[in-house]
Image (cartoon, rainbow, N blue to C red; front, side):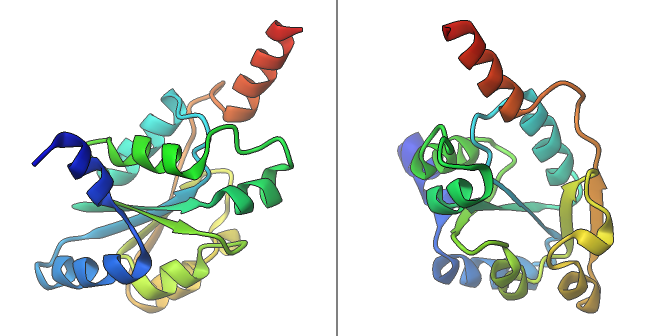
Length: 165
């Protein structure tokens, strides 16, 4: 199998992902879920995702579609399109699946997948993490990860704009 086919095969619709999730659960694999825009992949993202992946055996990333990124971050975002962002994330060896969502939150994904571990950045408190109630009600855990200081897409975007003036 071609390496690019492997990467592309990790980007799934929810309908295609769910049978795989059922197999992983049958195999008693611990499923970790996180989500985000992941607009310009940087060291902070890699650190966060690697730490999330280490909390289980399978890492699923819910990826905001271009429209939902625009709705959240403003009309200048995303900087990179959803296909590019999904392919880059799927190329990471510790990522098992990437699934798009266009709703304001990933609640529908979390409710369907019912991950064992739901992960968000430490800038969230558990009571503000969408889907935490669903995961906890199903016996799962909700965890937060501290970001590496100084790494953000917004800071990179600002630096690019300032340098190009």
